[in-house]
Image (cartoon, rainbow, N blue to C red; front, side, top):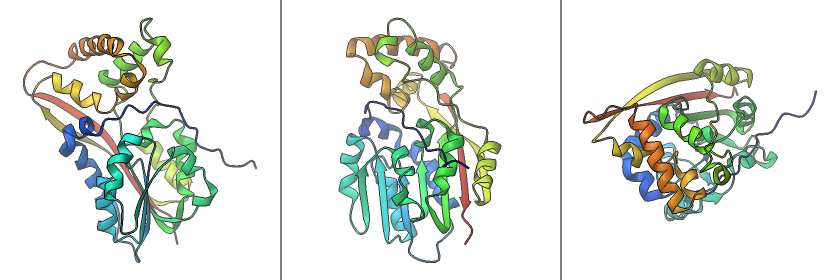
Amino acid sequence: MGEPAEPRTVPRPDGWKPALYDRFRTERRQPALDLMALIEAPAHAPRVLDLGCGTGELTRELHERLGAVETLGLDRSPAMLDAARARAGGGLHFAAREIADAIADPALAGRFDVVFSNAALHWLPEHRVLWPALARLLAPAGQLAIQIPAMDDDITHTACEELAHAPDFASALAGTTDRLPILRPEEYAALLFAAGLRPPRVELRVYPHELACREELVTWFRGSLLTTCEARLTPELFHDFLDAWRERVFGVYSDAQPVFLGFRRVLMWARRPT
């Protein structure tokens, strides 16, 4: 039998803007709180790993909620980590690192009582390889809690992928916005089960967001999905890209106000047996 396959990193420029991401702070925060609610109280002060910690606000909350002896928050974005470091202290640390590299690091295997990731792992490919590798990070009785968006077939995402291959933008974007397919919820449950975690709990939730107008769709996705495009393109090209993206998206989303955004997310939890 060969060695377990390792997660693969996809290079992406850092286009994250914390202030823009936080424009919809309340809406983005609720799935993370729901994910935290799935975590059972550990029997002792746990060691926690947060993969894709962003600004660290939720990492700090998780650290305090669990009474953790140590929490490590990892992110690849210098801008996000600049905001996070102000929240460090009392056993909470932040570091710059690619998530895939950390997951594959043998020095981290079996170290954590809780591995948490909120809206980050959908940026990584090959989830059938990634999920078993995540399980290897857990100590006995360790818990895995993950939330990922499931919007890859929505016009907001498909329009981005199509435009990235258009002649005006292809040379700059070079496939960096290609969709990384999200698996079906039952497939994630099967992966967790096959990795020896019990009992896998996986569910698809739709979060209803009421936006004042369609232009708020642009603001929402400029804080997440479109960051790669903005980082890769010149300001002039990004302006053209955004106009073309807006035209495609507004062709599907009604201009009735308020605008309804039904944001789909997959939440999952499982535990390694003692």
